[in-house]
Length: 626
Image (cartoon, rainbow, N blue to C red):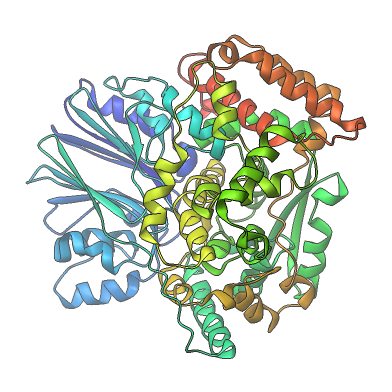
């Protein structure tokens, strides 16, 4: 688990440029560094030592004749099996790392290497003789990989901020991404908020040679649904594959701990992992804290739980630094909580298990119940439902019971569902609040995804969309960036190739039986953990943003940002302030106006913009390391 940077192209002072780029990601790998530089390419690496702690395991790593050079971020969990096969084929290894398996594997199998990998990874291999770069990202998108082609130079690496140190990089704000960001609370495509910078999508690799890039998709999930197995057979299979996955994800030369909420996912992983330490965070407001439930569960399985209460002051004070580490704004309030959670864990360990991906694979979001409920209403002809939806949107007051239901059911699933994020701006609202307006973009992003799962049941369609949007650009983005901000490796056993292969076969009834979600997974969990935890309804990561924004102190902080010069440049600020005022004043009214998610999306963007574009180059929070 580390970070890497690199470039292909001419530039003066190559070594110093590479050093400056590497220093921006020192948090990803504080244990050691390494570099490769020739007249065509430069690759830099920061290491967090997990497997083979000796210096022999430092990157870059090479094949036997040193014609291939590798930088790699992640873990390959089946590396021992691949290593054995490669040794039998005649390859000679210089270390015991999983990393070296990649460079020999590429030498042996070429681009087909990626089909054999089980793990989380982003890596780049430079062929010194052919002057050709190969780079790949894992099938889920657990590890990030960015690239930019500009001024006869290719830049690539684990974090965008490293590109800012290269003299050939043009830092230009990509305003076109703002509309979709307001609707999704993240940038939902391969574009970023930096013009010309892209993230390689999950299950893709690229080759770069003679200034030409070719991107190839090598993996795509295929949900088949197999109704031939009994429920007990499926639960047996889940139990078996999850035990194996957790064991593989525990391979390490350092202690492995676990995040622990009060929900089924982290609790099940914690039990299966039999770790020594668990970590939980919460807030002073009672209903926004899972600390007590997590402590009770940890005690029930005789494990230690370290918990931290995050104060409002700490939370708000961290926002600018969090946006620095994120590279791009993600207006998910849980990202900040994850920052504190990973910081607490990093005080004692280098590796933690986490429950990301369970909901997308096994059908865990409460919204997945929606297409299976109210089926009687959905039998009303779509033309009539559309009219009712338009009437509700334009004629009924916001906050009125039933308004949202009519609006949503006045659209097809493909029209209304675009990610698990809810209550963010509609395209109409985003167009109104942005000074330049915005072109409709949601359907352009989601239609190709829905086209790939035509004929599938509605829950499978929603899972597929979430795997490609919500999971990649929100859940995994914040999981990686917040862990690495604190030099902590976060491993996600649910997002394993073998677990996915099983999840793809689950019929609808084993995923969702409204109002129950993750039916089969809960069945497996309930065999070994208490029913209170196994059956607990999905909470997400509750954050008291709604409450704080009604307090004068935080209201004034946000209002100052909403009336700033940056806000005036991109937003109709009078509408921002009205939205903020309506939320604050709704505290004592009957309307129950809750604009918190919308306010937060705009505010976090402005905090991020101030850090990256408001004061020149952003400064690393721990500037002393430079």
